[in-house]
Image (cartoon, rainbow, N blue to C red; front, side):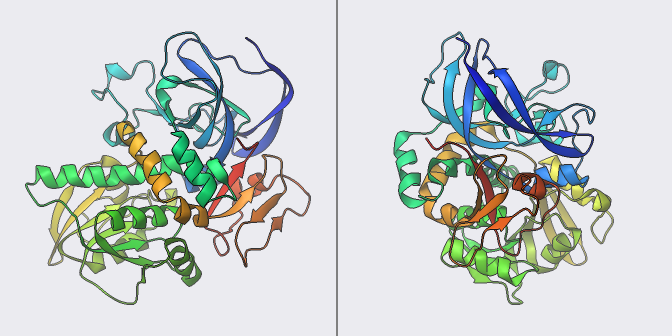
Length: 404
């Protein structure tokens, strides 16, 4: 069945510029094994901003009109032919990494995992394929994760200002959980005890820092938080209802670097204990891609993307370096459950909502956070993607459309 709508909207990138596009006529029709989703909530990722600003490489054709966005949740409105465990009306999360058609000719991975992603063997929504900054998105059903209705009720109850759009947090949560899966695998390979408990430092107190703090707490760690902006630390503590502000401590068992900054990595190296681990979760901006450790034995960006550990004895300290990009797709149901279990904290982390692709307003969601409006009533989302710095006031921004 073909459904029509007078106008539906999407946000596209073309030759370094971003624009809101109005589409007229027929909605996209799902083919066999696909579903059309009406997007309810979309997270704005720092990677989106870095791609638009030229600080992160995107492998897609720069001359193509590419719909941005990769953190999305929505309702299934139509299913293509074929059997599926999903149904019209289900709310789902969209998984953004896809295998190219010729993937099997150059990569041995048979499911989406960090090693494949880090080597550039996958295609990414928003860069290589149309993303989710759109009223509608068509995806293979294999890339959709159903959200249990009890989890939806939990979001409505604990984060009523965003409701079930909260599950736009699932993809970044999946990436975070994949870091600890990779850590466990690395420790098993080295025949060392898994990292459960101890002292952990999170460098960078944006939304990813908050997600890591939640994951670390679940694993029994005492967590310290650090950010060049003191207000960001306080904001993270408020989201988490606690957490230690870094005040010069050292000898951490694990340091998680969530900032795209070589200086943050070097800070982590100085504060981790002997035989400790520094996890390079964030990639570096283009201007710092050649930065390396003091021994000049490793490039930070390569460590971030390799999804393989490197145990280095340099400067009198033995450090395990590890990093990754992306996720293990089989952990997606755990990520949905983790978002549900932490709906209150993540609801607090969503400090600003843009109510629609064309809305000129970022609506502050908590006391003390004022609304922000573009001077010319142009879309606020475009201002953010073009580099509007809201970090002093906000943790996570999401775009919401029609509520479920």
